[in-house]
Image 1 (cartoon, rainbow, N blue to C red):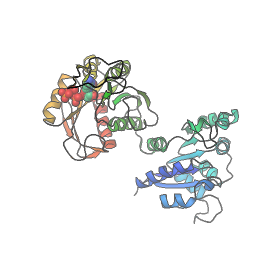
Image 2: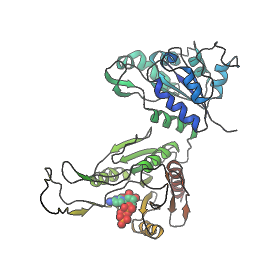
Image 3: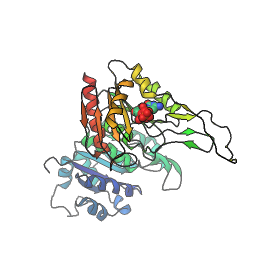
Image 4: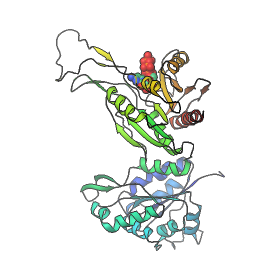
Length: 398
Ligand code: CTP
């Protein structure tokens, strides 16, 4: 593979090293050439053999262990890397990297690399908050390293606080941006609404739909990797928001309306990928509704149409994208939505075909604009997201 990307992962001594196995495996499966180097302490937590099996490359822990035929493996691994990820990065490794100390395989290799370097700290809260560590992290930032912030949570010592390694999904998303990012949407602000809304009936029950949020989250991830500043307004989902995306969670259609409208003015591209309820209970019962004999009737009232409102208010420079999910008359109904909601594009998808619709990782859609109709074919939601945003970027220029 002539343009095969090279990822170098540096693993130092922390229990969170186990999370990095997923990252190494993910990128190897994707066709990226992954090399892992470890500190001696890192190798106490996860054996190098694990990374060798996952990446099909030697995992070097020492400059002199003779595992590599290359006498200057640290120089060549460092120089050939397109992205370096140090995860977990201990206070000690951070201190060394901030000061250019290269006294083992990991620090020597990272020092030799000139590509984009990501550092994901993981340590006990007190060590992270220590002024020395904070100084070193600030120094790394000044030197062009990107820090993938540690999260709050339960730490290996049993305490709860800041210092937990970011989740593998976040590490993966950060690396993907470096390896596959583009600048198609540079300087553009993209607002995306995703997931299902929940309409409360009483304090116990609600009405919702099958939307998983996957398409909207794929759009947020793709927009970020294309260089945009991204805001995501999300209904409740099971998936993690993508790295580097500012996310606000909402519950009802009314809350989504306010959250989207508050942000819409500042956005260049707005994508309504959310499955917004068209109806909500006319009244939310303050107490749990008790059952009684016979049938029950629930009175519903219409919600506000967010896409239509954005379409009405949009400025000439804004591009508004809506989705249309149909079980019949897909194109005809979707063309109607394009006109009625004054959108610039409607992504029309049918849930009638295999591999499309709720919960799955693939989709097939027709991208309908005033001037064109483009069929995506059956593609991953990530791929479809890129296609939609490329089209939206073209419309921005018009
Ligand atoms: N939408 C919205 N606000 C609503 C309902 C829908 O912004 N209250 C948006 C969706 O996010 C989607 C588009 O409108 O981008 C199409 O939604 P859909 O429910 O498929 O179509 P509707 O216009 O609601 O028409 P119908 O329910 O009759 O199919």
